[in-house]
Image (cartoon, rainbow, N blue to C red; front, side):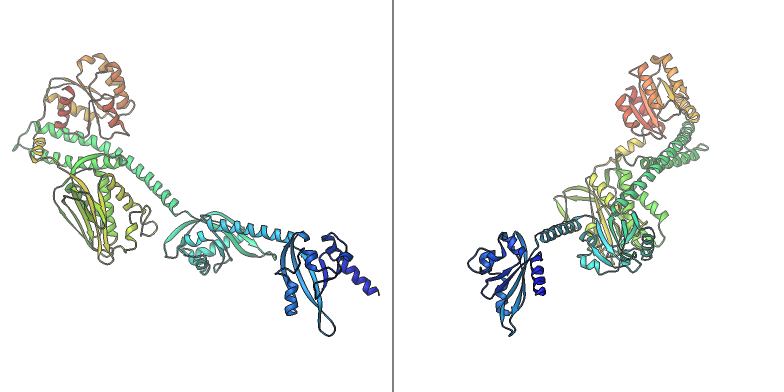
Length: 624
């Protein structure tokens, strides 16, 4: 009897809703939890069908687990939503049998899983949000085991794509150390993470699936298990290859800017000395004629000085390489300079040949030299064992638009420059991307990856086109088309060479801090009939000019002087006489001074070292 009482108490104290049913779906008994949920008493439920009591229907619902039990005599489970029971339920039915084994009914248990289902749904939603973040975030996310032989436990799509894999499964199947440019660095990284517990934004060199390198920044944390041992590393990887390339480009640019300033300063000093040499040689030649003693020697001095002047002009062009300085030039002259540089710098195993004809273009000489030198250097790099480099230029005229290597070139007159080699060649799948920024096939440190990209930009800025054709094992052809111009006539060139030195009777104030140049120019102008006043500094020039501005016809003013510089002196002279006639001269003008002075009233700018014909022509232009 006591056992029966205990069972009754157990049955009624169960929090789950329990009912005992016969084979006709009628309720034999329910516990208190079931009756309470139905807002009735256990006695009132007896004899009613379960489906009318619970669902308010005239027959069992289609999903009824008891119907299935009656068919197969086996237990069944189902999850349902039932308003009468107050939410989501997990329903279980267990068969009841007589001693003979005949089915007599079932135990029907309903467990309220509303909160469990809500928690599950929230968890699934959180997991979906996390999965969405994992799949869409642009940085790689990983989980892998520690040690040099670590394996991936988890990775996202961004990580797979970063390393050149199509799917996450593909990257999950490779050892972690295989993605390091230097596999031994994996052990170093793992040991550090095990020792410190985390790393923050550590820069490391990794390797893509195709073997190309990428620079990455890794942040990771070591995660311990319940026993305190490190089970795995969680972290993120940022691909900073482009940023690193930009940083290196900036550093390189800053270095080149410093070199440019140095080159400009050297050119300025060198030009001053050349001015003295050329000026005194001119003075000597004014007293000599062909056949006289030392005539030929002074002619040689002049030729050497003129060649040195060309070199300093190149240094000045390099110093102001960020400025587009367009001039009309024969491309043959550019190619001669390039060939000379290559002959002195590349291996003797490289045979260099040039085939040129006169074609004039209007370009920034320094930039076009950069382009041609960059293309030639790429060709040389493609022939490590030696080979043949051919540089050609000729005029090309197209009466209509033409197709070249799949691209269109507009009609017109062009200078066609062709640089070809018989080196390794470029694979067909790589060829379309060779003008992309940062593209390079060179090893780290061997190139900036910007050469052909910048070359393409420079040619486009000159309204030209550049085309590349290449075959692996046969070499590469680079064709550059620049708009051609008429160029000077032979008569004009001859006239310039024979231009006479112009004499005069005016008064000229020469301002220069270099005493040798000051004395040389004084002698030269005096010999040409001019009255000359000399000033060795800006302040001295202002004092001289203030005494009698009406008696000074022209001021020849050096732009770069210690203390009071040329622009400052020029401003002071204009305050004394707004109509002052100034010829600005410099071996190296800083910044935009050369361009600003004519706009502010300076009549002419002449570049040191100048020949006597240039100087006297400038004087006559100012006085005209």
